[in-house]
Length: 471
Image (cartoon, rainbow, N blue to C red; front, top):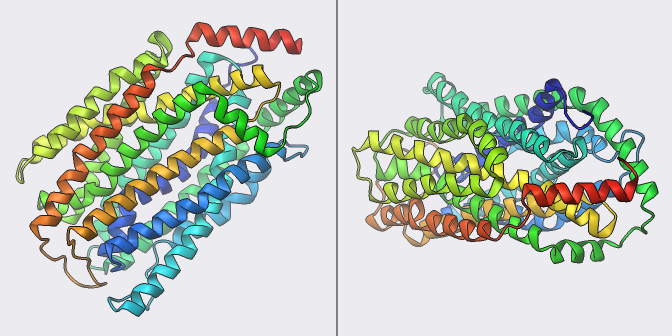
């Protein structure tokens, strides 16, 4: 069957997600704690650095998505972006883990640190979007089959979680080997490893999907020649996107799922170190438990998605995550075994967070194609990636501001970790429990209203084939 992909193509396409996911999860789990406890930046300033970087994404995400849709080359719309973005992505990621020699606690030094990390964040976010968004937009181009999309999304998200797990697993031995070195050296070495892996896996992706991506582009051009519809201006494209009710529902699911993930991931190292009073090296083990469980459960929830539906899979997975957040709120220092148990429960919800919204989005794109006669994957994925980054930014910014207001003590480079005041500890507990739980409940509400079933999608595909003559 033409729309079924060989395993080698699915593996290569999934590998393209591994490096960016490894980099992204490293920043989700480590960036705020790096800026405060290694670079010595005040938590309010550190949260603002990340927020400014994501505000820039409000500009570059839709613009790059629009440009990606309009790129016309003999190898298609997406591959040129992947070719051009690989090396800048790796280098700019590395620069985020370098502590400049002017780092220090004085107002002037803090301002200089802030300026450096803001500039690097702006450049890195541009390179990240230029690589990740066109890669994501290839999902509906590689296959038009409903169930195959779920399988492709499963491969992609499995590699994403594999990257997250692999990055966390690398952190444990790397930090142990470099334990006698300053924390600045440890984090920079970690950045070097992640950047090299990212460049290597994206190269694998390009080699593996090249032929399929080029042939899929040729097929798209044949279909669009039959559907003679004038190119819409970018403003009108965005209006069409925002009028697509199923897409807005998927956006709600995605936004609140990732906001819950970001609240949890950002505060987790502070929770493990300051509330549970465990060594710094203990945190990667907890994060590894969450991500490793999610990776193991991706195939199960992919099967549930195919057999019962994407909506049902989400409803099955999320209660586990809610139970975990409630448990972490009431957990006391010394209850380490329970902490691992709650990490396992959270992993089930994280698996669904990665899998289900990404499997829903291609169906929404097809509905738009049926209504407008054009495929605009880049525009839709631009909004999707933008929502993810907004969730990452808001989660980190809110946590940073909460810690700052609560009197959290930052650590100048080279200094030992201080004892935090009770107000900061209570802010950490608030960010690990109620804040993520409210987001998860909102995601469940949006999921209830998602309208595209498997039967409805089959009807959409049949009508598209009838219009294009591709039967």
